[in-house]
Amino acid sequence: MDVVVVGAGALGAYFGGRFEETGANVTFLVREKRAEQLRENGIKISSNLGEYKNESPNYVTDARKVDHADLVVVSVKGYHLPGTLDSLKVLAEKGAYVLPVLNGIEHISYLQDQLGEDVVLGGLSFIIATLNEKGHVIHSGDFHDLIFGPLTKTQTNICQRIEKLCDKANMNGIYSDSILLELWKKYTFINAFSGITTAANLSIGQIREHDSTFKIAETILQEMKNLAKEYHVDITGEDIESAKSKLLGLDKEATSSMHQDRRKGLTLEVDHLHGGALRLAKAVGLDLPYIETVYGLIKPFENA
Ligand SMILES: NC(=O)C1=CN([C@@H]2O[C@H](COP(=O)(O)OP(=O)(O)OC[C@H]3O[C@@H](n4cnc5c(N)ncnc54)[C@H](OP(=O)(O)O)[C@@H]3O)[C@@H](O)[C@H]2O)C=CC1
Ligand SMILES: CC(C)(CO)C(=O)C(=O)O
Image (cartoon, rainbow, N blue to C red; front, side, top):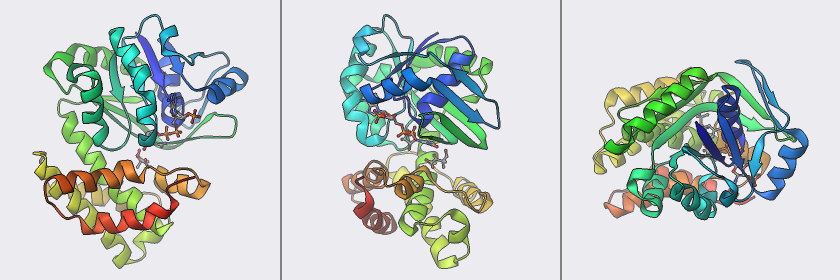
């Protein structure tokens, strides 16, 4: 399969590297600075689940240089998505399907509007990954799940092909028949987890020590359930309990990628995640007071 990865950051370099490892033809579509890093340092994954290195990965800085693509994995931050649009249009015109793996939900309808409904697949990931100063992936934790699935009936075949590719790869690829629900479940979890850890500037263990602080995360889960319902997505009480158990079961040092970005002084995805929930809520006349509060607390740290 010919795969283009747009955004060779933590996620893109990880999953792109894992696909490359199977022998798939992977091209990283990157900007100039990252191209220089790939030229000098290649792709490298450090992980307890298996190391990988490619000293000379395929990369381009211009989508028009890609001859053919079956699949485009989009792994940029929410605030960088508009900047990828011209490239995605070029690749979609060449017949590629687009698999975004960003956290959040608004990007799905945004991409569908721009590229056409049939082009955009549903995708998300559970992984803890970051890039070091050389641009190499540091994967921690013992999970590396890529969940994907069709958002229209026409996408079954490409999703089966992705499943076959994932089966060969060192990752946990999961084909979901209800990817929209999975996207909302992840969005629910991440808004609670990234919201409380980033706003409090604490890892999850310290949050759990204070009932009144943990309660904020629990209430965000509930608010996201109410929001999903307005969009005809049924997140159940059991799903909320399972998200809460996940927060309770995480290693005490664990924290969200947004909180890690805050610690590093990087730009935060708060507008894409919590801001997105507030926009969706406003459109249906719903109040999300806890999410609004957390959004306000994180906002001053948004820009690097
Ligand atoms: N990291 C994690 O553990 C997890 C992250 N996620 C989600 O995945 C998404 C990606 O996160 P992550 O991989 O951490 O982000 P990173 O910041 O590590 O990577 C994003 C990459 O996108 C590149 N980029 C931005 N704009 C463009 C463009 N126009 N063309 C090409 N490349 C571009 C950036 O390159 P440049 O160097 O040029 O700026 C950067 O390398 C986010 O939505 C995040 O919430 C989900 C699960 C876990
Ligand atoms: C919770 C986690 C680590 C799961 O992948 C995540 O998506 C994030 O922090 O952005």
